[in-house]
Amino acid sequence: MAFIDYYKVLGVDKNADEKAIRNAYRKLARKYHPDLNPNDAEANKRFQELNEANEVLSDPEKRKKYDEYGENWQHADAYEQAKQQQRQYSYSGGGTGSAGGFEGFGAGGDTDFSEFFNSMFGGSGGMGGAGRQARYRGQDYNAELKLTLNDIAETHKQTLTVNGKQIRITIPAGVENGQTIKIKDHGAPGVNGGPAGDLFITFNIANHPQFKRQGADLYEAIKIDLYTAVLGGDITAETLTGKVKLKVQPETQNGAKVKLKGKGLPVYKHEGQHGDLYLTYEVQLPTKLTDKQKELFEQLAKLNTEK
Image (cartoon, rainbow, N blue to C red; front, side, top):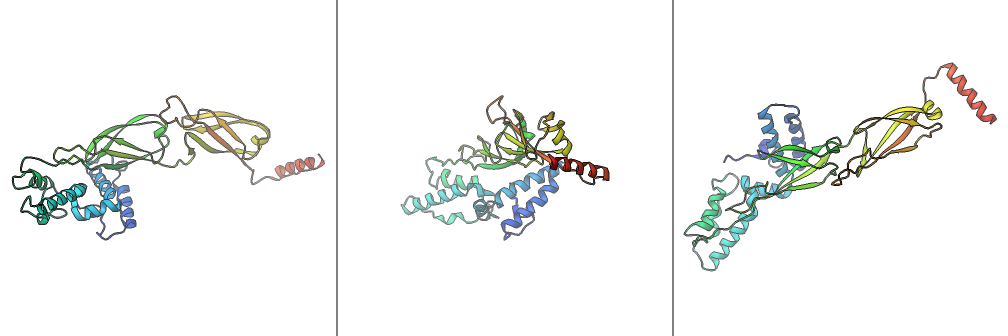
């Protein structure tokens, strides 16, 4: 299997700090994003490589393992455990080998991880001379899925590509920003027949330009003109599911609030239940008044003073 240099994928030096890695990823991810390169298989492959590289290099612990073990970084813990077992076995007089056989393993080395374990546990001269082999669980994968409020307004299925494999998942309506779900057995394969790791998907829900979210409730500021606020009238308001007509009561004050029941987001894992939409009226004062309009306002002011 060809070794993928994640530093080259992002175009950064091995001594690059977290900020440089983050900036490089964002720049290239925008360039190769599938939305900007529809039906471009090469761009999609490049985008997946960028995500993999960023996942590893942006995490200090994963990056440390990658720097030491290269493409086998996911098995670093198992390797260290096996090396310790080999060392203890040698010290106890159970064999003549030493831990010196570990050179060349990791980044830039030629030793294959499966071959390493076969030599450690399955060969006649190793610890597993009787056929015993150590089984290790595969590494967990972590992925981020970016969504909008509209995306989580109803339960739907979506296909993701993780490490070159397509996975179809169900996205429940009303999921929270930062919420993580586990897809069992979709992580890295196990070693020597061990169980596969799991895939953890974290939802990143972008801020909406119009609505603010608190749980399942939504909040929206809506502008009305002075005349409608004073005299009352009909207006149209936007919701996540479409437009609705509202009746503004006469003498509505700036900052007044109304509640549209059930016009918020679905309540997570409570089918049929929805939050509410809260509207705050922002009364807009007229500008660029004509002389006649100013005269009328002056008359109103005079009447109000007399009253």
